Length: 317
Image (cartoon, rainbow, N blue to C red; front, top):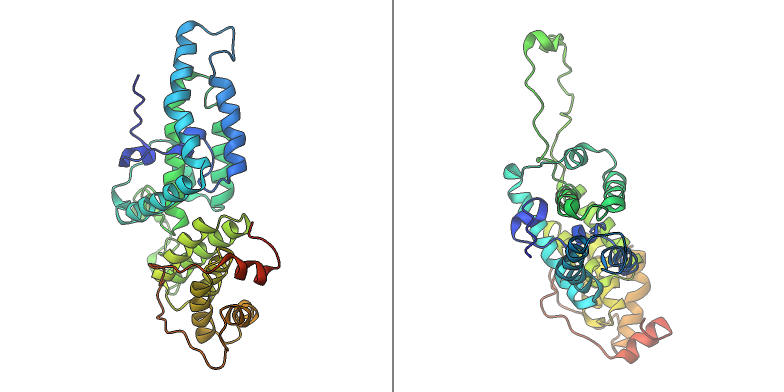
């Protein structure tokens, strides 16, 4: 049996595993596992004695062909990291093609205009999850709705709102107010977001991922931010901490150096750079690391685990 969905992210030859499980795109492993167990319990052939043989077969097909692969992809550290990277790339592609993006559901269209993006998005996803697999015949339609929400959320998180349907044209007679009375300096309500605001969104997402110890995904967000604003001291300082947590001391030093060049008062860099210099056997006043203000992450270098334990006073978690 083939399950084809042609809306949302699925439309771009991408299997939206988050939509299959109906979890937010920034869900952590604990949340993903909890949701998977709920869905698997619902779809397992032995879960309901009242269902017909055909319904049991359909549930088993959904479980084996959609739900289990989604959980396998999102529960493993390596596979989830690879998936998030691809998801990020698709988000950038959607930004470039935003004029051609079409939405079919009211929920997705409302998310385009929602003032509180995160609250509306996560509330909508949670509501869909409550009934996603109640009717197996409707499960793919609900999954498609979730995927449209994921699509809009990815675009809006990157600061793009151009998928919003254009407002109806208003004639002069309907407008009522003469154009001469409109303040000349009033900023348009749909002004495009500034680049620094977009970078701030990347930083907020990265900080949230760091708080959850999801360092690989946080690094992806910060690398994207540095591509937009390579001289952002906060980005350099945060990505240095990510490398530090991953025990890549040389890369952490490079980014702490960049952070201090851009902001000599950066507290995090001032706190950790001397410790890294000492761990690497270098004197801060005599040694310099040559680096450029780019993400510089193509060839990360790892240091020994003993150094990491010495810096943080314990084993790497």
